[in-house]
Image 1: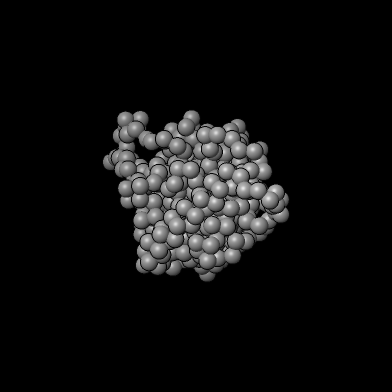
Image 2: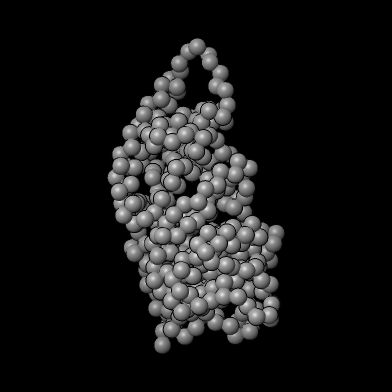
Length: 349
């Protein structure tokens, strides 16, 4: 569900309940917290040249929202509470919080989008929830990316991968790069600007590959949608619609290799477009070893996972050099917050 403050008329009963008083108090607390947080972060954001950052992350226990700031808008989610509210009560509460967010940032309340994030199964993370089409272009690190604040649980650009994108750009010069589960291709754009010689971006969704092509174009780069089996002369930046595991199997059969591979899979997917299901906790070893099978000598695999309490144990991968990158991708807006698991894997000589 997506809500913006003021969407629905609220019945006036003429009485103020205890819940109304509690909600109003929480709205004031949230407003004060966001003002303080925004004041702290806006100078830092200007210094590193980003319009996108984590603004609030369940800082007040009774207000379990996660809010990301995107230029002049906010995309947020309400996480599951330990108790249940009726739907109308939850909607009224979300409306009140959206109003507090808008007031604290001095932006229109129509620019605040709050969704209810429950335990995700299947393709819920990428399932379209609305057709409001609140799109805008935001800057990060001298680049431009298109985000959709209204229609999906996620916007198209993850703030918690910002430092990972920066590090990949620094390593990409004259490299062949493979971006698996490419989503909207932000890693690919960073690699291209960093001077990558070739980039293959693989994803099952035409919608997200089209979005990725837009992100390339916004940065004066041209990416082309190609068939995985194409034998024609290939452009340097390629968008490939396909199942990642099938793509890797075929690539290994053809003895193709890449210097940098980015493996950032969803926690779970049962898309009808793929063979079987993908469960990260079950399948991560297979994905990593398949990726390593097409990694060039002295190449580097970047592996990231946002599954709760997930971590790799180096003993599971004998003969490989595994470096925990989580401390290096931690940025100011995520200090003290849960970050995705992130590591690099290199084949030992």
